[in-house]
Length: 180
Ligand code: K2U
Ligand code: ZN
Image (cartoon, rainbow, N blue to C red; front, side, top):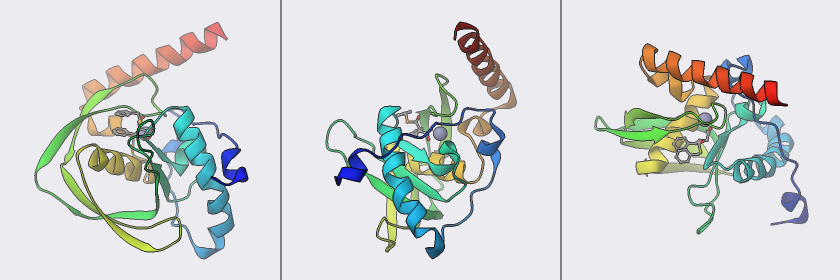
């Protein structure tokens, strides 16, 4: 890691119901190269510290289609950057994964998604890549790409479950504010 990357600044993670989490992020262009090059190490630092195994730029207030993922930060770190990711294939078979979200803290629920997805994206060197994901990676990639479109994992739940979860979040945030 270069010196700047080691000290990339941490970014504040937006918390639901921040309206910015509901905005659509725009595709990254060559004009964004420098901003994205600075944003990526900060997103990794912020993700590792949270801790999380995925982070989407809108969660740190940047409406750009950039995602960082590292499923096994403690063991063998395998950081992956997805620029302008798009799902180009999804299995009919579904899988259930308990999901959480750094923007919906301390709330978890089972989410049903396609078990396997094929993702086309640009990597950190802006090279075209395709990724076949299954298991936790499939859930994570879909969860992060949802963030780029203003979708949160709670949107995949029944209205009843979503309302219960969002009410618990609001109460927890209120208690937190009361204590600080
Ligand atoms: O908010 C985020 O995007 C980080 C998410 C990423 C994620 C959600 C669901 C399933 C896989 C990844 C998490 O907060 S990272 C923490 C975590 C780790 C493993 C399983 C569930 C949640
Ligand atoms: Zn999330």
